[in-house]
Every structure is written in C-alpha cells, then in structure tokens.
Image (cartoon, rainbow, N blue to C red; front, side, top):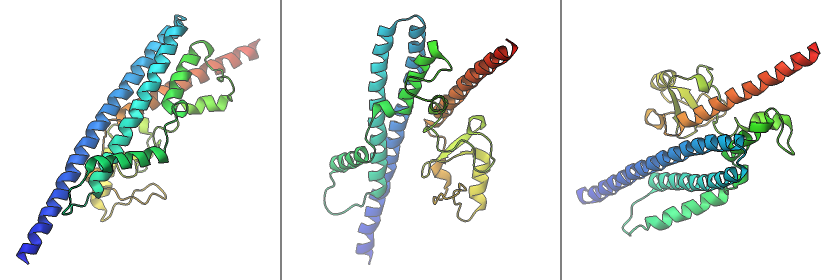
Amino acid sequence: MASTSAPRSSLSSAASRIATAASNLSSDSQTLIAEIRKSFGIIKGIAVDLEKAQRSDKVKELENTVLELLESCDDCTNLSEATKNVGNNYQPSGQPTDFVKLLEDKIATLKEESPFVPHNNPLYRQFKEAIWNVHHEGQPMPGEEQEDIVMTSTQNILLNMTCPLTGKPVIELENPIRCMDCKHIYEKDPVMHYIRTKGQALCPVAGCPKFLQEGRVICDPLLRIEIEEIRAASTSNKAVTNVEDYTEINDDID
C-alpha cells in the first residue's frame, strides 16, 4: 500500500503546484490588463483635448491606438482565463504534458466562444462618446437614439451595480471585492461575515449557483479601475442631464 500511495501523493502535489503556478500567472496577466486599462483612460483624455483643439488627424491616430490596445487587452484576457483553466483542470499522468498545446487549444476555444469585435467593445464606445461629446454633448451620436447614449457608458462593465448584501451602490463601496467564480461584487466586511457564518455560502444573488469562498472573493487588479470608469461615466451623464434640465427651464421662461 505504501508504494501505491506515494505516487498518488506525488501526483496530487504536482497538480497543486501547477494550479498555484497557473493562478500566479493568471494574476500577472490581470495586472497587465489593469495597466492597459489605465493607458486607455490616459489616451482618451488626450484625445478629448486634441478634439477640443480641432486636431482630428491626431484623434484618428489615437483611435487606431485604442483599437490596438483593446485587441491586446482581449488577448491578455484570453491568456489569463486559459492559464487559470488549464491549471485548475490539470491531471498529472505518466506521460509528458504539452502545456503549450493545452493553452493554445483553450485560447482558441475562448476566441471562438467570444470573438473580438473591436467596434462593439464598450471601452471603444466610451472613447467614441467622449470625443463626440466635445462638440455635441447631450446629442445622440449619428444613427442612435438618446436612450442608447445614456446607457452605453455604464453597461457591460460590472456584473452588478449594488452590493447583494447591503444594497449599497458599487461605486460607493469602501472596500469592494469580487468573487472570482461568479464575478459578483460585494462590500468586503459584510460578505466575509456572510461566508464565515454560513456552512456553505451560496452567492446571495438570485439565481446564482456559485458558492463563495474566502480565498476566491478578492479585490482583483481590474475592479477599482472598472468602478472608477463607472463613476466617471455616471458623473458625465449627470452633467448632460443638468444641461438639458437647465435648457428646459430657459425654454419655459421664454
């Protein structure tokens, strides 16, 4: 029995080391994605200033740069997801494992399931809206309804906009953290209390089948950036609404 259990123990240890290494690599990719997102915000600000200066040629160059950045961000996201998946599902055997092929196959699957369409990317839409609003604030972009303009800056970035336990808006959370399994966002202290007091802490979002675990509910590198993007977009939308309200008041007076 001893000779049988030793190899099994060794295989289990190898799987654990692979999973840990994959998790670290995936985290590194997330950090890179966060840096790309920061760069996007900087480029968007520069493009707005150039549009104000009526340097449309330079704005177009930056738009092309944004599209390249978003493609790189998509590649990094796929690599991060593929690395994590391979690490979590790796089963050692007596045969050598071709990790490169495993990663390439998983990345190909991810790209097939969710192909990169740059002009449909919400961050690209944010860039286009920021430029459009320099000279046309409060007006719908060509071919679109006003309701679409209001929604595009705030949709498809965060999965939930309020903490499922406190009901507090995500943009007002003091210590936001996100479940790595279901991607729902919580205030840290309430969700940690919830996890520790439940035998099995099922995600409290209605219909979510995932269970919450302390080590899997974290403030990942992208979370605060995404929240800041939502906060900035909300402030911008409020400014547009205030301008429209003021115009309506003046019209009534006239």
